[in-house]
Image (tube, rainbow, N blue to C red; front, side, top):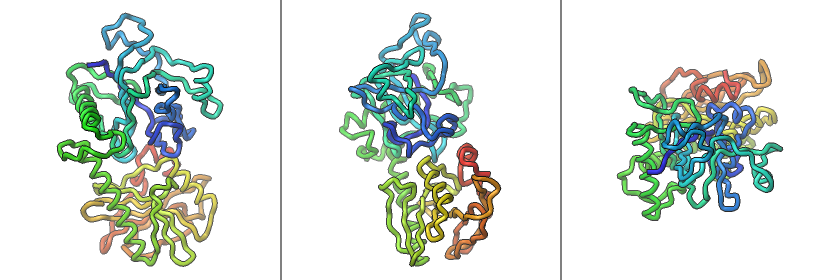
Length: 373
């Protein structure tokens, strides 16, 4: 088996100059700037990919592999790229590079390569390189969880916050990675494209089952919100494929709602906004259009008994530029209460009231990042 190194970066959909889908997780630079240098990790530059890893210092290959001290380049490596999953938490595998070169120190590109790795006047360095034909990026719904949230260590070696991880021989982490890589190989050899999240519907793979379940959750959540809005007299149109920062457009007379839907299989009111979605929310706060409104609808228990938790932007009293959040509870079918205070959240459940802390609707790191208190 080839040597395996795991590199951890921020979450994106395409890593080809894509900023809209960025979910920084705990990566400070990406959170502050709205992008990360890893945004080019799957950009094909003359048949090669060049991978950026957030600052890690010198890589001491000799401490993990049978190579001489001060080895500058490790060749034939399998690089596994992971990122914090924005909805499920934990570390998800976002892509794999085979037969890659990994460098002891960051490499600074020059000439044409530097120009093609330019981001707002900065040149993105790289720590590894591979032929594009040996690289695979998984689509977001086909990314398996490598390390679940709150993974118990049990004396085993699992990655914590480190951006570089070397799975130890015979460890549970290596066994899990081997299973994931084997699943990718089987899907590729059977003609299914692991990067499109389709094919291989044998029902034997937990990963494939998760992909299908994820889709069912999303479809059920959007359907539940759409039906709820129609019951309230709105005409509803899906714009999910347009990448606008919301999924549904609902109109009723001269009133327009733009609704971002987040589906959950559990009862936890948890979701994380992408940069594109949060920027969309911020634009509505700035524009102050009285007849256009932005909603975030988190649908819990989407596949069993859907409960819609709706969060509504309300303009008015603010303590600073970020505004503040307020939680208001209503039963199904009641109108939003607009008292001029920051953001109102509604837990919508027919015949039942549920008290929830609004901060729970977004993961802690996202709440801090977006100024939510």
